[in-house]
Length: 127
Image (cartoon, helix red, strand yellow):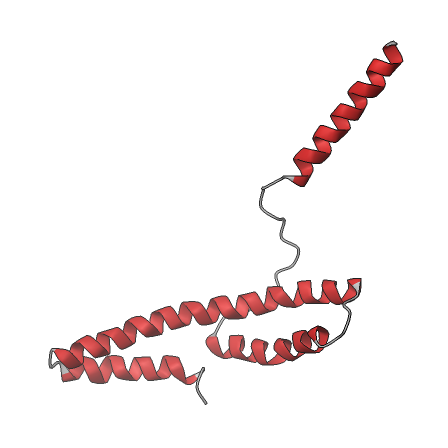
């Protein structure tokens, strides 16, 4: 009887620990940092280099475990690139808004100065 209780208790403990592990909402551990994108130009270069690799994998009829791993690793670099571009676009949008407001309020010196800064920021994205 006592060994049945121990067996039952052990099964409950295993079940509860497996359930808590499956429902773990803690942040995922970092696996890789990916290629850095310290500038917009580098971010665009990384997208140009790694998007075709992702596209080639996605074109397959079936994805293997190795394909899934490769996608996993590619996404780190792609995420870094998109974060850099997003940060730069936020900055560039703020500059353009300054140009917009300055054009409405007749401030040509601000339009010229901030307009040039805006154009420099956007050049890496538009060729």
